[in-house]
Length: 153
Image (cartoon, rainbow, N blue to C red; front, side, top):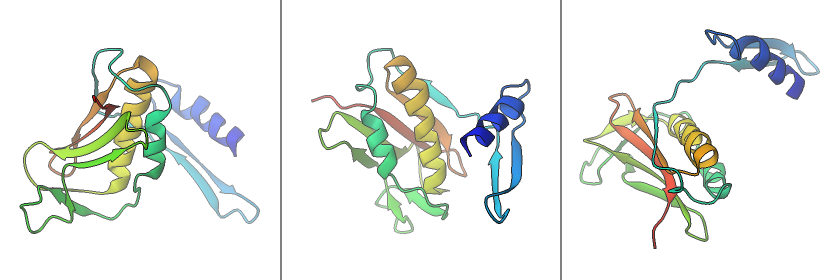
């Protein structure tokens, strides 16, 4: 499978413009498919050196919900909210945090989209630059943000 994914990335993603691709009829009975699609996250990184040590935030991301069920995220004062915000996840040693918050009001999204944006922040900011960062413009009304970074004590 790794070779198939690598081939998809080489042929369909590392070209300009990146289109993505699909491989099908995989697995013993041919019922498995792998699809790679373009993902262009809206990520803003903070200054280098503002992030936690590499690898710490990944522990949080591995434990974050990832289902595709649409939910209402927003302030706890809104009685229609299913996930009160801000919602913070931290590592046991409390040196990295992942937070999901709203910039204005209630919005609809699913955990998978928030997780994907948080992965992008972790890879593009924390791992690549040693910085904290934000995934911006998430949710149906673009009012949800995710943050990954260091917690100040």
